[in-house]
Each structure stands twice: as C-alpha cells, then as structure tokens.
Amino acid sequence: KFRDTFMSFEYLWKCDLHASFNEFFEGLPSDIRDAQRLQEFDKKISEYTNIQESVSHLPNSANIGWLKIDAKPIKQALSTWVTKWVFLYTNYLSERVTSSITEFITFTGNVDTGLEKEVEEGDRETL
Image (cartoon, rainbow, N blue to C red; front, side, top):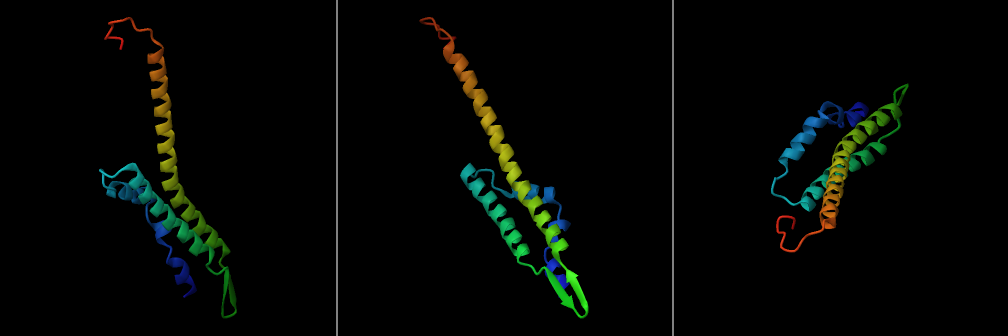
C-alpha cells in the first residue's frame, strides 16, 4: 500500500517527455488564437503544479512492522520529475516569446532604417 502511493506517479518517469509534449502540441487546433493556446499551456502547467503539490503532501516516512522507510529520497525524485515536465512547457513558451521579441526588434529596426531615407517627390519606388 505504501509503495502504491508512490507508484501512482510512475507515468512521470515512464512517459517520454518530448513525445508527450509533441502530442499535446500537435493536438492543439491550428486555428486557435494565441490567447487560447496560452490557456491550454496554462492548464497543462497548472496540472503539473498540482501534481507537485500532491507530491509534497506525501508521507515522509512509514513504519511497516519493525522497518521504518524514509520516503524523502523518492519524494525528491518525484519532485524533480515534475519539475522536468513543468520546465518542458514553460521553456517552450519562454523560447517562443524570446523569438517573437527578437523578430519584433528586427522589424522595428528595418522600419526605422526605411523611415530615415529621404524620399524625392514623385519617387514611388522608394516609398
């Protein structure tokens, strides 16, 4: 019974993180807006945050007959696995935002350069 408490989280280390993420990402409808996509990511991140909370409430030890079992190492390992799952989703969002900001900065730099050009009257090509 004590073992089963921890084995209920075995999917954390048995499932392939990247395959699960790809399945999640490919399962998102392609026509949804970014705000809706963020909500789906938020749900997934919240799901793993709740799992983290559940892990923290697991017993630190158990007495089985004359044997006392220290569960802190397994709790730490489970916590590490949950953190890996959360990082997978949050890192994707972070990289996406960084990429978008870089593209925006490049775009505004190009626009500034274009706006600095002197345009002769009637020169539609430069406009």
